[in-house]
View (spheres, rainbow over the protein chains, first blue to last red):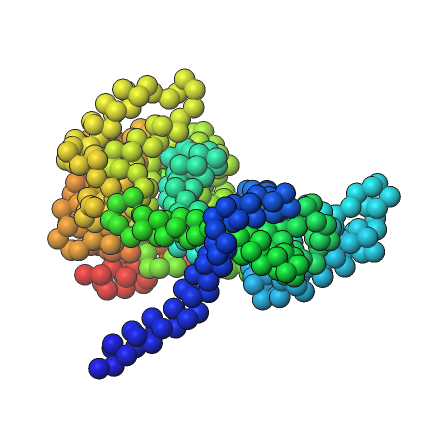
Length: 267
Length: 242
């Protein structure tokens, strides 16, 4: 008797909190027909916002992968002073509210901050442009790759690496033949989570973007702007694009989980 | 190839000495066991010989050549780890081939030569038809033999075995012990085995070095050790093992 009740409750909750709102986005966006939807998402400002969001994700992704790999490797394989501190530092973006993070960046890298003021005479401006958006996106996404890769790296492979070393492999050969294949899947998984977060980030980006229409508006910011302009159809149409991007990452995530070789006996 | 270890010392931070002025020679083709309880320094000594760990003082000579500071990858010593450390995402054949594949330039055999060598080694360990399997699909004993074949593939100048039988059940252990010894004789390479198991050391080795707190208390053939234990520690350790 209890089981059906629990299942029904879970279903109801999922429906009310997830299905209904997402369905509402699509219903509302297509309320005036597909033609209106299409012209809404191809409006110049919205197109610019979509492109900026994708561009940001494309810049953030490789930096995240490289940094995440280095940090995870260092923490898993070496004992050095500051190791624990690094471990905690990497977790900080999860604990800090994104809007606070945005303000911190503004304080340091803005025109009146120490770094921003120092760069000003050289005509370098870090905030209120793509650089600022990329910087805060890096901040909010940097834990993902490390958190996925580190646990796997910590429990696997050290003996394998030593074996490869005694067999004459160079450092690069050890990494590419032995270490990397063991962490490909967690790395990909972390990268996808980070990308999803970078695409959807609102709070931190809103502080440093400067909100220049058609120039420094990412998709989430553009949606809010359209909504505040009483352009509901435009807002919801743009929201469908964001939802679709999220859906793609979700599907990729599911595929990775399904094919994760650690589950099978063979790789 | 003969190995000569002179006055090797190593201490870890905090000053605890794990190797204290250890000297040892291993003759060509000889099988030597380092026997001792955990913490006696036997694994540290093996790691120093393999180059995975650098000693504070002392020298390691291979046929008179000083290799104390030669990097592990340049020593061409075949090593079998306690966990076997097989590359889990590579097939058995790829595991065995690894040491040949990472060779550089002219030293690296052609693909067909590598394949032939792998086939030869798989036959040697009687796993000729299992080359396509992955480590996770093998029994513990089979994994151990693959680790052995992988170590032999590089035509090692010395064979180092770190508790290679400890993860196996008693029956498999006995069979493999004999086959490892036979392989080692066939290839004609000198070998050093680390173990805490006295029966194992006595069954497989030409000479046994009993280690205690970073020192070699006594070294000799099993018969010599049994007949005349040199220290109270050796006596009590051998008695406890029988």
